[in-house]
Picture 1: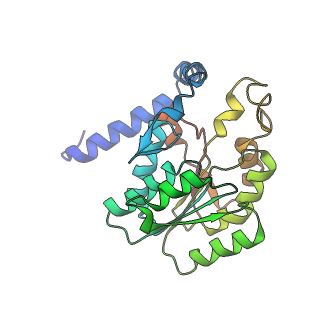
Picture 2 (picture 1 turned 180 degrees about the horizontal axis):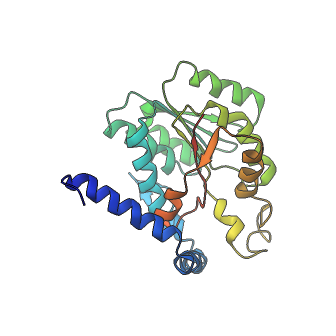
Picture 3 (picture 1 turned 30 degrees about the vertical axis):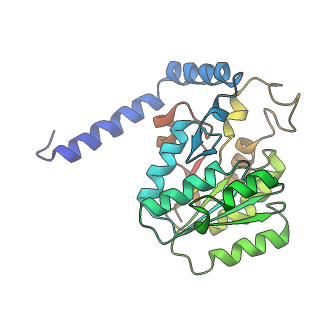
Length: 247
């Protein structure tokens, strides 16, 4: 203990988070809960400012923490769906007083979702592109947005196959600025039972964002996994999927 109660609080919290990360039983029980809850499409049951967000609440809160720490003036998100995530990100920029912008990309922005996002109070902070996130024209447009930005953050949440996410990492991870983050939701697919997704989706154990992250990190030393984020959340889509740029 010190004479600084704020420092003491943060030191104790850091210690507790590290201990949670080392607790295999807690990790196993958290994953078991995620699998049991998924049969009710648990992550589909939340909205942010009226738009379905399709995320675990823990990951929403962690993104808020990261944004407060790094103050990004550009956030790039692949995958839009109902728009809850880009609306959330835009609202955080607004609430935090950050002069920033959100760029969202989706191969299929459905008309009813497009209408709701364009008419949302946060729409002035959002630019959307329809097309594949790895299409050269789309990538070039997004790179134009990144020119001259002080702090760029990336969230890759579109098509969850190994090949697609690896291609996204190659294109978008280099845009992440020093000290900022590339977030990979859906790395948890690697830890669900084999065959759980492959009956209805083109991804499964061995072919997902986690394996793409491993392959990318094997030859790229610019990023480190911020294990504290997973250890804190436990119930998270982004198991070891919070990548911090360190060089």
